[in-house]
Length: 368
Image (cartoon, rainbow, N blue to C red; front, side, top):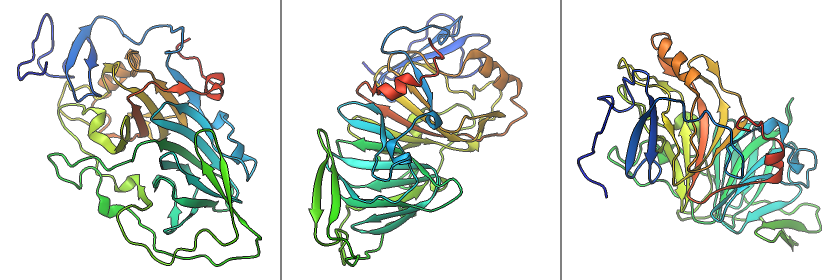
């Protein structure tokens, strides 16, 4: 049970995640870093293992994956991971949708990794660009129109949740930290006139589907709307990063949106910890109640470039974290860097995620 007093046994550093003196900091925690915890101080790197079986960690480069919408305007995203609470997919659309989409199993949250364009919705149009989050409520009709460009494609990481996505409840800092809702871009209504089409295809995206509806009028014909259920975009540059000088903060501090069993976080550029002896690298952990997905958008970690588009899956109960050599380098160069420049999108799920066959086929095999 939780208590005010935490026990300390054997050789332990005085400060949390600091002054390790050769020990390896390993956290065994419940509730995604918000529940009971035990910090164990080991002799050896707990990620130095070879894994065999379905719970081995997976790393895959999204550039090697081939969603059908990358080459076929009538195609769709590629499923990456799924469970009963969510589906995580990759889209690389270069041409406008010739159809309209409506996700009827739950809400949709998309991160724009590359590209720019327009999303037409029943509530009005929304421009998007790199670093934007795009939220589309359950059963809202929408259509994506990428901008023509040299690369000619928009890369989206898509999260579909079966429960309603919500802004996390305000904590001690108040409702504008870290996510300030007033920075969201909300569409203005813009009803579409009918064009020369005989009918309009609205594709319902759902388990066991799709189902297709054909309208004789333009489905985005809304003249006005009111209420508090609407699509929006929100750029990661507007996210208020919470920092500490004396301890590396847990991932849950950077929560962006959540649904039952699904938590979405932004790890973004910030000042580095400054108190001498503080570990600047996330501690080893096995996050026993949550699977973790990390999507590397860009940036660097103390001079080491982050591979853009890398997708990492760490199953719950399995140790993960930066290898010891990377930690030692960070300690040696403590005075050389004053900032963390990473841009990483994280998705944690209560239920275990099942990788798709395409993901398994492109696993980099770093734990094999």
